[in-house]
Image 1 (cartoon, helix red, strand yellow):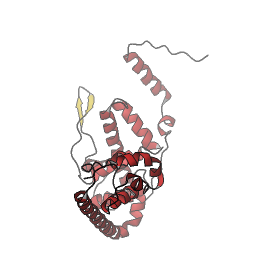
Image 2 (image 1 turned 90 degrees about the vertical axis):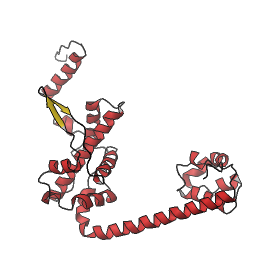
Image 3 (image 1 turned 30 degrees about the vertical axis):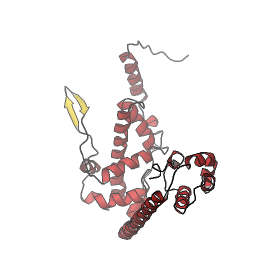
Image 4 (image 1 turned 120 degrees about the vertical axis):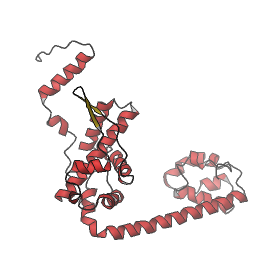
Length: 266
């Protein structure tokens, strides 16, 4: 509707929900049309964008646009109220499981809302239903299919799984890899394994691998009753076999047609 009126606030602000933009839209509805006055309603960091806002607010906003925007804002407010009521109900239902939610929330990337989704889908004691973490991961369908041919194992396509839990875990995985620690380093290694950071497919496969790690960790923290203890970003290097790593690097260079001779450092 704002675009139809020539108001291009979205070119400056990411959405119409921030308080500053909401105040400008309400002022437009009330009859204010002067770009300078409207832009001056900006608050916080948006005040540095006032010149851009003035240009973005030059349009042909009329009474029809005002009516439609008023209806849209009322609808947004109604949806916010409904979401708030549902959140309150969820909190009431989750109250008996506060301790279990805290265990889940100790895992990087998993917030309070996601922990409620986890409990609602797998229960507060998944070990009672799934004998192992891998059984749970398989049920969620976060275990890629494995196919073996001529002694080589090939990764198959991931099957569709729990439509509520799976996307939440993937979202949590993206949040987890933004925090320094074991999961971030695991993600980086998986990306390199699947083709490198320039490959969208590699990033997608790696984040699914992290989501698989998350559901495995969830099973363990709930089964043991102990919060998550991060292994650290140096986990992979400290447990690495130097001889095995040396052979791996040599084989990688030889695969590129390079001859390798190892000599002790002088």
